[in-house]
Image (tube, rainbow, N blue to C red):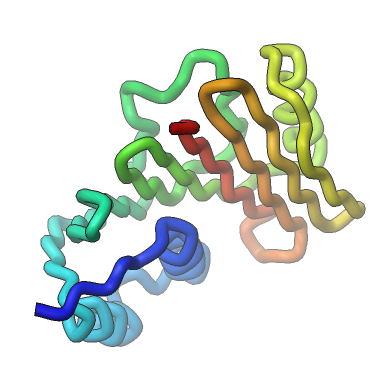
Length: 163
């Protein structure tokens, strides 16, 4: 069986795009399913949740109106104030998608991460967009935000454990 690794960043972008467009269960889903299955990825769907296996383990993506943060969300990472629309989880990595996130909220997240002992290692900022990375010895938090969408500000907030 031919098995292709599906990078988490690509999966996150896919889920974010589908979640933000409101098109998770439509013809796009069939194309995504077929593409993953043709590349040897076994998919298990349950409502707004899709699970598949990669060489690195299981990946679970959840989207919809009833998405919740995982119970093991790190306590030293501030939680965004906005509407959670998607969660992608795999071993050591969590990516979340949010709507209705203001620029002021992004600035608060960056400040709270710094206060919690994270070091800002990357930052690009304009009035309409922000991209930053914050590191500790144990993890990296990424903050990617854009004001230019109909959701009132879209945020991808990722947490990756260092190995």
